[in-house]
Amino acid sequence: MPIIKLSTSLALLACAVFATRSSAQQSIDSAYSRQITELTPTDSRWKFSTELVSSLPASLTVPTPLKVLGYVPGTLGRLSYVADIEDAGLVQRRLEAIKRQLMKAWDAASDKYVLTIEPEVFWRRGAPPKRLESR
Image (cartoon, rainbow, N blue to C red; front, side, top):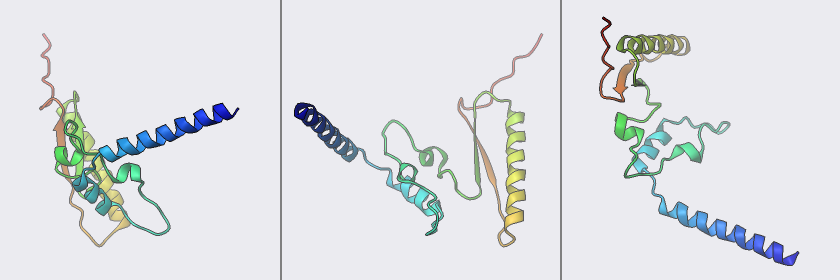
């Protein structure tokens, strides 16, 4: 039994060393992380975020939402929709429906500030799909 315990302990130690080494090599996108922290409410009774989402690893190959959208998700007044093969009219109707729901909830919860929503559509393929004409 001591041999099994020793080998288990060595395996756990190796995992801990490897995890520390690999996490030390991963850099964090500080601009994205700073904005997420600024947008997250703070309250001593509640924890609104975790370390898993309060920062984002930096990558040379995968852009952050901040780089793609120009802002981080959750930015007040910004409503982004990523479209792919949907009809442009359907995308606009969906955005308007979400905008109406947000405005209704905002008006019910707050009378201090006017909320302006800026909808923005990001087409994955660069533009709405072309319709095939039926013959």
